[in-house]
Image 1: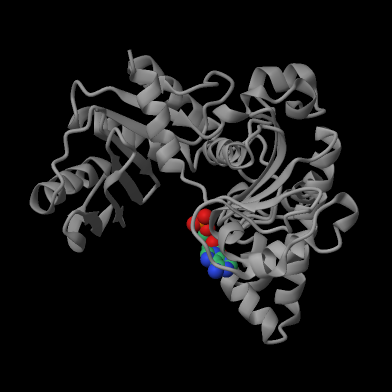
Image 2 (image 1 turned 30 degrees about the vertical axis):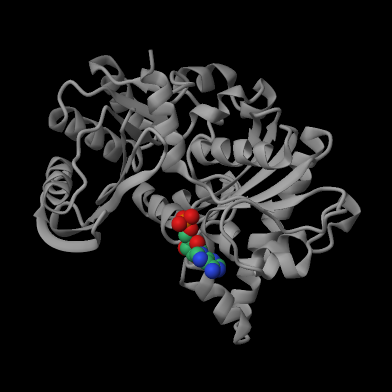
Length: 387
Ligand code: AMP
């Protein structure tokens, strides 16, 4: 039975999960504030513990995870380690076993994903040093979207330049879109034409046909598409030229796009729960932010319905998609002419697992399908190293 350790490294955090061959979670946890005085929160057989510790780097984070497992269980002896890597570029269209060459390629791709690939690389390096001889598998957020047809992945810019510089749509959240579309197919009993809305802190839409991504809203980077917590999604590129020409620096524009946009830019908070609460209190700016948020999603649903030539399910996932009946209602409201309606009681009911939130006789089922990126990474890591 293969035990898989899944490692998801952020710039200052490291999430981990240990799964056995039956896909049971043996342990999970989070090391936070890597780079200084940090802490680990570990859930194992004995429950949850939080321990403060000095965590100078990702290697130290893995050492802390090992020490915590030794003290509180379970025994940590993975057969394979699966890593989340955000950007696989044009090179990686499937998970790969990491060797020195793959590691170098992931490092090169950091130019395309300066915020996202370096932490993944640090996690890989730390795990290779910590678990020598244990295969390490990189699972890329972009890989699921490698099936997008040329017209969906090509930006209409100078073709030579785009080819030389790798300027094209790659798409992200692929591990989530893949897992959720597979669970949707399992739930419905067929793999048809789905629109998956991954609405979390980051957010993206994906059109899936027969189990393959055919269009997605994030692009060269995770900045394009839907309105997110701190990223605004689609924006006229002319606005960036204007800001740069009128005195903003590249770094200031970077901060604007990654940190001061989206819900945070419009309302001061990137947490949708706070925006909903403010709107309920009569805050006009919060109400506008919710309107912009839903309007953008509805535009993508309509576009993808056209690309897919019909729709067999609309699927909500991630923090907002799974937990906010109000956002689901705002997205679906008035789309009855497309066959999209909610069953209000089902939409309001809390639940675990995949569930239907539309009436039984609706033309197009609307589902909530909880995502599980760690499980999908574990499945890939196991599959790539099997045999
Ligand atoms: P994720 O990135 O998938 O973990 O999603 C995180 C986001 O989900 C948070 O920023 C919250 O805004 C949002 N969220 C979580 N629970 C709820 C809820 N009950 N209602 C609305 N939004 C929620």
